[in-house]
Image 1 (cartoon, rainbow, N blue to C red):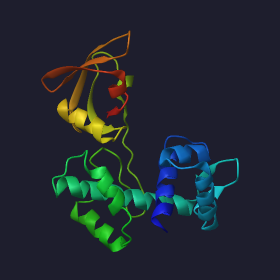
Image 2: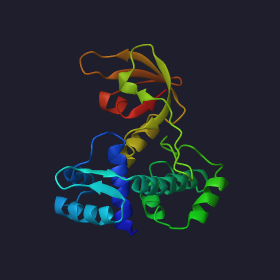
Image 3: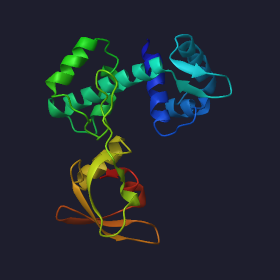
Image 4: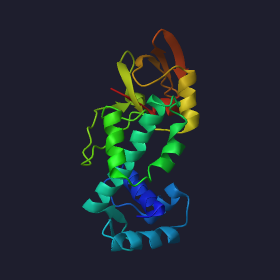
Length: 215
């Protein structure tokens, strides 16, 4: 597969993870910041390779072959993120763009050795699950902080928004994976939260709470 084909497969995979319905060409175009006509051309190529099920005007879904291929791309991406954070001391807001380049390395042997070298992690630095060599994923039960109520306590296990700006904001507030968060108050007016993180009390918006996964 070309880099572009891999990027399309990964995008479709991520979109299907939040929706059971077939994915529209417009949704893919928006996610990849390209034209719908370019998406259609690519979907035809992927369909010819038996990587997607595509019928014009009816959306697209991954075939079993396409789903496994997409999981292997995601696996490489998230393992490289772990390597960059754990072994090269990159911060979690720096690694996504670098991993976007490294995920296209073809050597399966290299990736499996990298997996073993890292101790076979099941989650990346953002709390997202890492598929194993067979594409299996260990799912963690979690919910968004915005769904919590007053006096509930949970542990931060992931982030929905992995943008650099959001991760830097969390660093400033000393919120990280493994942080214990207690809901002190939930405002009825704007659904903002007063929370305790460790010994520190802060107020966060509903938008922030809607991007933190807790268990």
